[in-house]
Image (cartoon, rainbow over all chains, first blue to last red; front, side, top):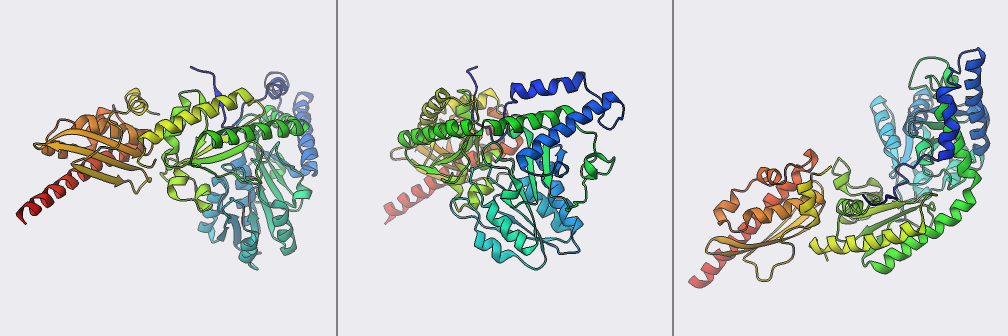
Length: 384
Length: 130
């Protein structure tokens, strides 16, 4: 087996050793239940509240507005279902976009079964949402808008501040799935004008199975679970102390070194982009200028993504594709499709997503292997 | 996800490419996923003496194309028409459930190529009559 070249960091990331280190003692030493009032339990409580404080600082919000959950999906579900159900007497209309993660789209679709109606905002060919279209969809019954911060497939950054302003003027709750923005863009919730924001630990070098939901004081979503008084009833479940410590540590690291990472990864992404364009004909960029610095999505015209994925896998390179063949549903990427690309282009889309561990050597190796892979598969294709 | 037989056919597919002066060409697409396959056959005395393919599709689609060309080379038209997608999948040692439709595409490709061959033959006969 060759060395792993991991370029699928929008799918998940390696846990930072410093994060593991910070977590360890809460498994075997300070393993008390934070709800227990003796000293052993209170040490765990202190760790949870300290983590909340660290997160609140980065989000520029009150500590009481930070909630720890089990995942980004769970955060999205609490925000969307919880708020819609709570405020259904105010209206039953929800707006979201055509490029959302399924955690948002499927939640909104599910609410239609409960009598809610929804509209989907279009995106332009760069995969950025059309603000005028969004404005035109607002009705007196609109209670919630949910638009992601940065798209997971293309990296396209969405105009969250502007949407937030519009929502505020109209008195509509605004949620953003900010899972792909962490460590790349500001998470200052005041600057972003958001009422709610979702994060997922494993996308920024914390473990899988822990997420964060920010919600402004005064918004009271109906919880998905019912149980104890944990997390102010928003998310009953005994707090996952080590993971909560881990996600706070990872978030802290991501913002402590953000400038360094931005500069390094922007250079690497540019090197990858230029290398691919120089060496391979008939490439279509699916990532716009206005995108997060770690993501590059391209379509190789005339060939299909899964065959590219498996050929690169044989060289130890891990990437992902929007091809229908890997979706499980035989539908190609709804994101690339929403940008107006034809079926074959969606089918041949490949996403490279970098991290702080990506090296220049890995990028050069990848350019080389992608070149030979595309040449090989194009020979088999009827479209040359 | 895929077994070694499938991966070997994908890595080194047999009978790839466009054919000069084929006796029949079958062009099929899979409406389910968007894969496309072109099969070229050369027929002499009712026997498929040569067959090649070009495929736009996933690992399973390429492997199915490759193994199908192996299966029908040297066969009579009637034998080739009897080929089923199950034989294609079996010869590959099985495909993941969601990829079975790729073997159907290969079966359809062969049938389309034979149909084209028969059409061309019928046209030739008609021309001779005139």
